[in-house]
Amino acid sequence: MFWEKLQWRRHGVYLLLFLLGLLIAAVVFTQLRSHPLIRPTLAPLPQHPQIAVHMNHSQAHRYSEPYRPYTREGEDLEAIMIEQIAKAQQTVDVAVQEFRLPNLAKALAARQRAGVRVRVVMENTYTAPWANYTAAQVRAMDPRMRERYDDWKALVDTNGDGQLSAAELSDRDVQTILNEAKIPWIDDTADGSKGSLLMHHKFIVIDNRQVIATTANFTLSDIHGDLGRPDTRGNANSLLVIDSPAVARLFTEEFNIMWGDGPGGQPNSRFGVKKPVRPPQRVAVGDAMVTVRFSPSPASLPWPDTTNGLIGQTLRRSRQKVDLALFVFSDQALSDVLEERHNQGVNIRALIDSGFIYRDFSEALDMMGVAMANTAQARQGNCYYEAGNRPWQKPLQTVGTPLLPQGDKLHHKYGIVDDRIVIVGSHNWSEAANRGNDEFLLVIEHPTVAAHYEREFERLYSNSRLGLPQHVRDRIQQQLSACGGKIATRPAPSSRTPADTPTARVNLNTATAAELQTLPGVGPKLAAEIIRAREQKPFQSLADLDAVPGVGPKLLERLRDRVTW
Image (tube, rainbow, N blue to C red; front, side):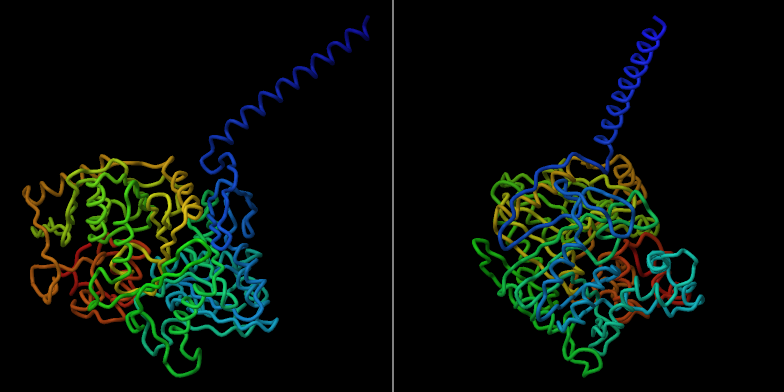
């Protein structure tokens, strides 16, 4: 009897432990399902045979990150690029704004050593040899670049001793890896200038037949997530692999214009508005149609003939719906096109990055039927809305910003028209991208391609804040009160720029390079630095302007009453 009772007690304990285990498993499973960074996996969508679409936050894939100990939802965009580069037999051409991914650099080095011709073009802001910087040079960095420097050092310093050894640099520093492999590279100072507005491209051409076109810079922040921020999972981005000699020819032409005769030769590289104007090219890729356009467009070219004009033409083709996922949206003419389609019954939804959506230059405000002036102008009794500002008469409630992990950004730059046309590229929907930066834009007509972008939009839209937040409404009312209940609209730019009038101010967040150069002490180089700074973070104060390289105390005092943001 004693042993039977003991066995029953043991069975009871086992049963109790089993039930407890089930309860714990149920709780954990529920928490995992509800965790904002882990969602149920979806089935992969079909791919077009020649135009493959990849998302670094795809709900249909999971991967283990190469630089952090995380397995997470999404596609490894770096691994996809490495896989394609490894197949190269003849040439690999890379044009990218910022390059900080060592594994990708090693893949290029491996092909260079195998006899493949590799060439790289970068933006000069990010080619400083940080490995040789002194402590004084690091301390002199503006806050934005210091943050990038600290991230780079954390990536390279693998043993965490605060010192960068030759072995660590050879393993993790992209410039060291490229140089040791004897890969030739230039930046946008190769034309003999101090740099264009922004060399903003993000593309690779392989063997004159395959193009990798992405919205992501080659950085941890844009693809995987930041080393020092464990909650981040990388800015939301897409990547296309296009197998088409005709498309590759167009991208190679763009690359060669920038490359000239390469490093050490004549300064015959051309960037920005120095490049020849080329009209959009329409190419058949299998049963899809792809239109390719490169920016910038000179000021002499009418807006309909620019890259933003191509976006507008494509939006006008909509008959049922338009969905937008944009890092920044500040082109008034594009907002006007969308309002026209909205008034014709087209359903429009838009998601804008949280850093840009509620700025006074944001067209998201127009779409929501409101306008915002600048509080600094109001304090001076000089209250203006941006030139051409036109809030929609029939506002939308389907405009907002996705709720992303702190530190991540909505870095997409795409629109979807009627579930069959995708507008995508490195090109932000802004004046700077249209008139100053080196950019590419693709218009891809095929429902299979569009489906990938639509799924990504629904992922973001399902966890977003839509409509105008109360704090923005309050700010608008405070502006009206400060301006005496009346705010004028600034006249559109003409032969006389806003800075030609003593009482007018130049908006640092929206001014063209030419308008910035009308300011005292601002030449082409400083205008380019101001535009680079606002592409990363909009100006909100004079302190932000003070952080721009080339702006000192004396110049800041001269500009104090001449600028706004």
